[in-house]
Length: 112
Image (tube, rainbow, N blue to C red):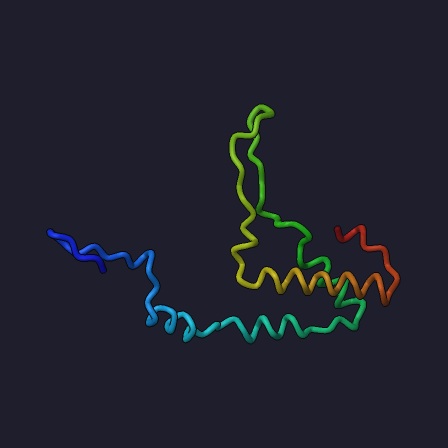
């Protein structure tokens, strides 16, 4: 805090306090067990690998360009990155595709 003649100026947005850092470290990640579970899933079944590859899309299905008379008037950004488990799902899909290629010898172009 900086004191001036008239009123104090608080620079909390620029200066970090030890208490704030301690609070950030004490936060509990409620999704951590789900993240760990998704990361530890081993794909050892062809049917499961195919299901995962079909169920988890290769691209975000919500991203769109809105066209009017052939001109782009708006863009809807990908909402998938707002999903807190996005990286884990992408990794699971990748492992499923790798299993299909490496272990089963399948062509995965139909899943892309």
